[in-house]
Length: 397
Image (tube, rainbow, N blue to C red):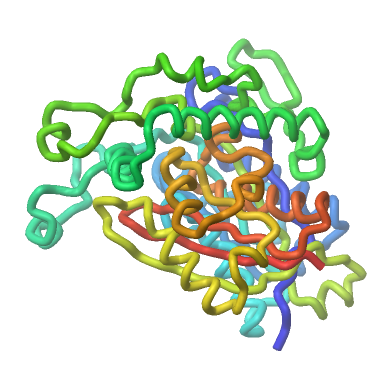
């Protein structure tokens, strides 16, 4: 049975996902095309060898509609013979793309495949795909008569259930920025970030190479003055247990970005003279309560540890997506995880959460961290809309 290996994985530096952000003047298809083109060029790979491009994208409307993965590979100059598909598992879309890619290699369906992701939250805002129409039918209303809630309320419910106070959430958020800023200063992100020439909001040509969402000066004290993002009288009446601790400061920011991983069989890598950086060890998926929504990384992790035969102590790093500070904190509490191994280079609170791109962005950071530290095993897990999660274990080679 072939092994699925990661030959390379890279990303764009994050851009603020609003008008004026570094990447906001560039169409999302061009962001992804640039990453795809650079990925094959820096590995001296003939793109005609790519069996498929599997891309993640959540807002598949407007400029991100009509299978953006296919449009991006054509924009990147790939041969017309290379197919592509675009998947949506909400925030874990490109992590799911990596699962599909690696599982296809293991099954013998692919020799070479690219898993990727893109999201321009400045040009295709959250909620754009459902404007004017509800995605929920009467059966959902019957099953959840009080109504489903947004992720912000879910983050508050998680904070209340695990009894995280405001200071704990803000301290974790500040640490995310401090770790990311230190990693950038140490040159840790240099290998994973692909420079891109863009036009900024003032019309100037710039080369974007630095994560725009990281604030090195962030402190717990500075975050303490921010107001709750999701409080309403209606929600307060429905959920009296909520203490309203979730703010813009301890949440991931709206972000633009793109990322991609070059995945192939170990035999093909050897044939092409390419050196694998890591291999896929184990995969898992889980669903959980869609009201709490963000807790599925916990059962997904339990499942993948059981399948892999590994324990949390065997893992050298864990990337648990920081959609909100309460999510990785709840995960760490449940597993007694070492705080030093949890998002050691900062997480999405600092580095941004460009929805469809985040899965392969986390993978890039995890691979590079294992290489820099000599670690062997890394876990990646991601909360996803409607109460789902992916979990992946990779092994450095």
